[in-house]
Length: 271
Image 1 (tube, one colour):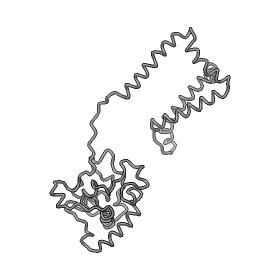
Image 2 (cartoon, one colour):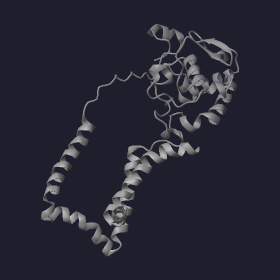
Image 3 (spheres, rainbow, N blue to C red):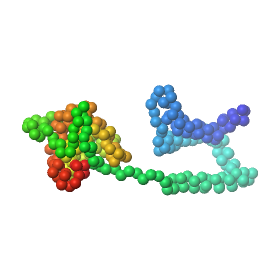
């Protein structure tokens, strides 16, 4: 016990023990011990762990170097291993061990891993034939925006603009270019409606499905980076969703794809 205390009080061995303890706390304590006491947490990413450990290392070096005697004691074991004739065997072991360790780490990072190939992601995955919205079944093939047939479209567009500003601007932006205040925190970033490769390729019923069901409603081919958009069916009514759609097309300078165009190209508006 006294020998352990002497090691612990030594600047070098005490510093190494502190580094090991810090690593264990950061690696396992934050991610696995805090939830045990009811605090939500997650494992620390390796890049963040490296930054924390570098911070601890700098703090330890600053501490041991503030006192000349402590700094001399800290360096003494290192100097002995490097120049003491009695430590020749240890030097030889270290000269072999460090390159081998570096080689093992490098090999582990660059070796090819055998695994299942990733699934291909479709930017515009095929929609289902029908969806259920608040208890009502809607058949998507051939479905047109009912608000375009009922007149007062300008009034509907104004309503859609108000709903867009209230709910969509943070991600899709006030210019509908996918550059809203929260856009850069999302992966993938929100769709740029001013791009000809987005809603110009889609029917309004497809856009309705995507807004209503959001990211949670995407099929498997929409992975592995599913949309962060929520399912707006829990917030907006069907008429409100239909109102937002013509506003998006009008404001972005696009026009919706018709079902005649979709059927002529052999897809269902899924792009």
